View 1 (cartoon, helix red, strand yellow):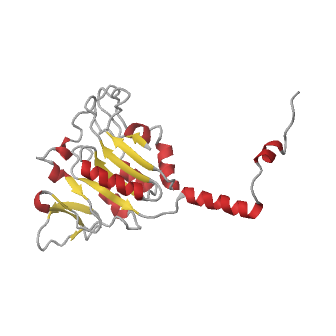
View 2 (view 1 turned 30 degrees about the horizontal axis):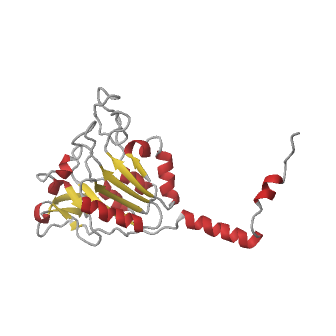
View 3 (view 1 turned 90 degrees about the horizontal axis):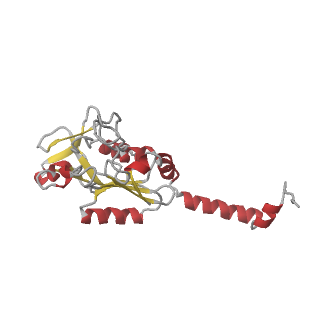
Length: 248
């Protein structure tokens, strides 16, 4: 299923959260350009506060959605983020989503060169991307910046995640990414690192990949159990039975 930040998080928001909650076997590709690109440039649910558009000439007053935070709150089993122009990374994330059993949400940062050009330049330009991007790999310490000089740490006092230089003797614990953790707390904390104004610092990759009962399979099992107990259904009898009448 291909969708965008406008339709998935606005009029389609109810469908999105319940598809994820039920764990319907869908692969949802959410292209996020932080604008209504197909309906001529109105602000969207992911547009930053103060965004000036045709529908917000004095700047948007709405706090934007964080799509990955929303997905984790809806109990999604597979949550990831990638960038449209990073072909290798995009392919690897989409392959993992395709192999996942159940609902998978992949947020794809996508430029809109007509109505919101340059929205993700900080994540794409060689001068800034290494400092802005946090590339997540399961089982690996979360480091970024030139030569991995920066890291994501868990504060021992508060348990929250922070970023900063990697230095010997630092009392903070360098985070090791676990995409398969049953508890989504750390994955959620990672989604909160992205600053909606500057995009520093923005995790990309697979934030969560865990197994949950798949709705489609559970429904098929129920139908099989009902058939085994009551025999095959009689659709014609169902339609003609009960309170029916003939109009002449």
